[in-house]
Amino acid sequence: MSEMDILKHFLGMEITQMKDGVFISQKIYAEKVLKKFNMFGCKSMSTPLVVNEKLIKENCGKKVDVTLYRSLVGNLLYLTVTRPDIMFATSLLSRFMHSRSHIHFGVAKRVLRYIQGTMDYGIRFKKNVEPKLVGYCDSDWGGCQDDMQSTSVYVFSLGNGVFFMVLKKTTNRCSIIGEAEYVSAALATSHAIWLKRIFEDFGEIQDEGIEIFCDNKSTIAIAKNPIHHSRTKHIALKHQFIRETIEAGEIQLKFCKSEEQLADIFTQALPKEKFEQLREMMGVLPLHIKGECGS
Image (cartoon, rainbow, N blue to C red; front, side, top):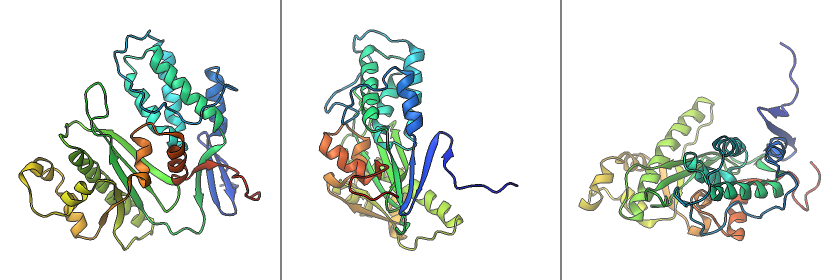
C-alpha cells in the first residue's frame, strides 16, 4: 500500500487542514453548478429564500422542463453535504418535482444567487473542543401548504459544526403545536441514542445524558410527566420511550429560547439577521474570516 498524503479532496468536497481545525467545503462543485445553469457571476442574494413566501403545487405557473428542474434540485441536494444553510430551501423545492412551474424554478434560481455570494463557505470543525453530542429539535406544524402536514426537524453537532440533520415530513396531523414538537423530540431522541452507540464503538464515551434543546415548554412537560392525560394518549403510546430515556439519564430534554433554536433554520425562511446568526451557530463560515491570520 502506498503512503497516503493529507486528505485534501473527497467525493467533490475540499478538505482544508488548519491549525485550529478542519474546514470542509464544495467551492469547486458550487462553481460548476452555477456555470451549468448559466448563473455564474450573477447578482448575489443574502438569503436563499424570501421571508413569508408560500409555495404550492398548483400555482397556475408555466410548467418548466422536468429534466432541468430535477437536475437543479439534485445538484443542490448534493451541495447540502457541506452547506446545511440551503437544506430547508432545497428540501422545499424537492416537493414539487411532479408539479414544477416557473415560480418554483425562480425560487431555485434565487438559491443559486445565494450560493454565488457564499461560494467560499463551508463547515468548520474546531480543534481542542470537547466532542459533546448536542441536539436541537423543532417542527413547522402544518407548514406544508398543500396537505397541512408538519415537518419534524432535528440536528446534531459535536460542540461546534453540525454533522447530522434530518427533515422528515410526518404522516400524522397534530392538532396543536405541542404535539408536533413532541413527535419531533421523540424522533430526535431515537437518533441521539443511535448516534451515541456509534460513537461508543469508536471509543468516544459520553457519560452524561445527551442534551436535546426544544423551544416548546409543553413538549418538555409532556415528555417528563409520567401521567398519561387523555388528550396526549394517542402520541404518548407511540413515543413512550422518550420518557424512558429521560428517566434512564440517557437524554436531557432542555428548553431554549426561540432565538437560540438552531433547528429554526430548517423549518422556515428567515430574515437576514437571524439567518446569519443561526448559520454561524451551525459552523457554516467562510474559509478565511475577516480579522483572522492566515492558517
